[in-house]
Amino acid sequence: MMKKTSPTMRTLARRYLAHRRKLGYSLRIEGRQIEDFARYADRVAAHKPMTAALALQWATLPQTPNHRLYHAKRLESLRGFARYCSIFEPATEVPSTRMIGPAHRRRAPHIYSPKQIRLLLHRAATLPVVFLSDPLRPLTYVTLIGLIACTAIRLGEALRLTIGDFDEAAGTLRVPRSKFSPERLLPLHSSTVRALRKYRLARMRHPSFTDLLFVGRNGGPLNQHTVHSVFRAISGDLVVNGDRVRPRIHDFRHTFATRLIAKWSQQRSPLAHHLLLLCRYLGHQAFEQTFWYVSSDAKAFNRTSQQFNSYCHSAHDRDPVPVPNPTVFRSSPNQPAQRQPPNGHRLPRYLPALASLSWRPPAPSD
Image: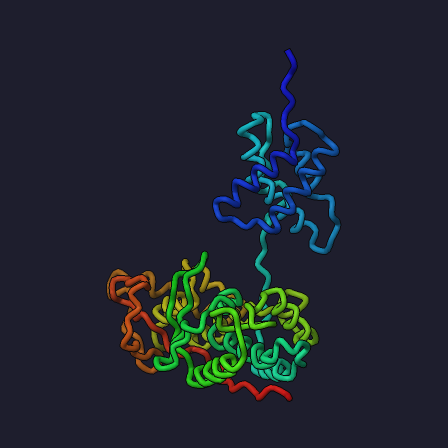
């Protein structure tokens, strides 16, 4: 009787990735790493089960800056695949999470100065119209960067906005639900409303083939990779103050939250309800995701943590969420946002125009 040959590692990798992607996971980076490991395993240990030693050997192959952290991330990407392989091969070893140290380290973000933001908006306004099929290019990037800077929405959220998500009469912007955030309705500063109205009117004068708000070449959706490429071109010479080599679009989100929390931490009014509302405004599912934004300012972090801890310890003696200060929060529009979690009716469902940045996009160059 012939002995049954075990499947190759590449076969198992294809099955595993197909299974995970059917569940909705994209696995772009992790998928490439698993496929690379499978090819390596079939080359050096064909038809043998995955072992911790083999996984470690593959994970430590590249020698790059911060290679220890990179090696740990590569090793971590194999853990789910190893558990899958163990179903078919009991001798499979799942790599330990701490075999070569932690795989994640939060790097300090770049905090934009108002001068840097104005410079980026100016450079965006002077972008050349490379293709005749994309006449809105300068105005598109001015409006996109300005919107992200003064509302702190994610780039992916901004690119998924439709024309109907902007309500000019109410002065609000509906951010649809995503994988990480619930649907939320954001109030806009009057200058932001004017900028979005200007862009929408300009957009309607040109043919488009999508209902998305921001359009690119030929009136189609604006590509995220193209946005990153353009942003690198206009921000490459900025002096960074974080741990990364160059600033990112996502750093506008950090700038918005960090400066706002630092400002609130200097006030005598209760801070806790401000932070909880900011958590909802940013679309975070857990408060810890919001609290981390203040960590880049050590003094503000200490003040905020002391105030919030003092508030939490005495929360059982009073209403868990104090009445908002009318100078900080404004009343909601007539249209209710029932999709937002009610939170016991203690939190207003709308936030004010929290951004201190008021911008008016320059006219695009001829």
